[in-house]
Length: 105
Image (cartoon, rainbow, N blue to C red; front, side, top):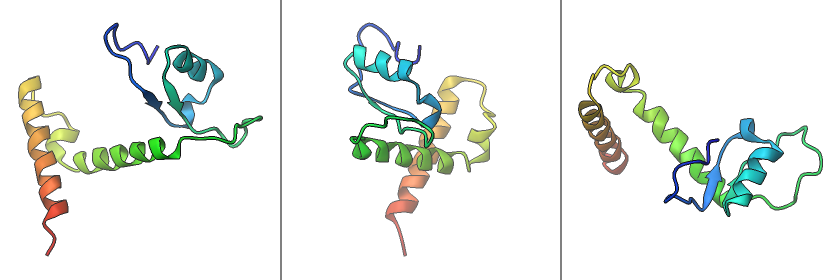
């Protein structure tokens, strides 16, 4: 199960896409005290009126950042052999992304 992160970790929300729209996924999250922020498919019957849109907007920001990160060929192709080197290049690429977003001329 995706929500089994460990005994010490209890997230407040589980954000997913429409592929995880199943009653079993929502029920598993709720049974652990986690708010499921998963949009309903258009074919789903009996949709509730409330949906945590503010939580789901964070998912879009993460997807955009991952898309920008994968523009770096060395990261997308996983050229580095060790986790330490790969993490260093990810940090370097994220710093380039941050600098570009802050420094606009």
